[in-house]
Length: 231
Image (tube, rainbow, N blue to C red; front, side, top):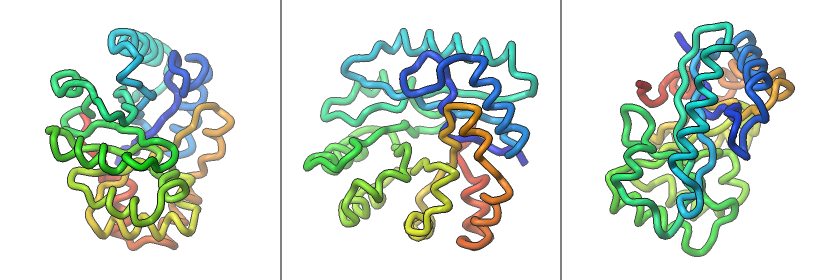
């Protein structure tokens, strides 16, 4: 079965991604060889108040075209922006272009620390838009958000979480993951790597072992393979 990297930070042309195509190709080759990853999802950060959608798409298309020419194995890619949560979000007819293929999920980045109105802004968006929300870099949320706020956030309808492979080695975080899996919240795993050096530290045998030690077979299966449908 194919493995998916649900948070690959190897898309040149964006500030939070890797520097160039050659570095990205080298890192993806390592992820392919060591972890069997063949499908890559990129979620570069996007500020709806200041960033140009046209420029975003142009840079994404240029990077994907370069990958198709240089990557030595067959792979599938898609790019969608991670939208910063704002009190004023783009109109729904704009956001529909940001959805993950074949879903109504939008990748959303919460403020790094819980602000007084963060929970209310997210709840309002979920309840008054036709979209579901994939919260990126979820491994950071238990560090910066109070437990009661985080509990209410993950109980909102239409929420999914994306977290890193490495977060599976954090004992407190695995407890958190078990709780949200039991609630039926989708959880997507990604490498989060932005360099060949970081890619070389993704040892999939160790990831499988920690899954076996900390999760039931059904939970581990969900984490590894039960993602969102791709185009």
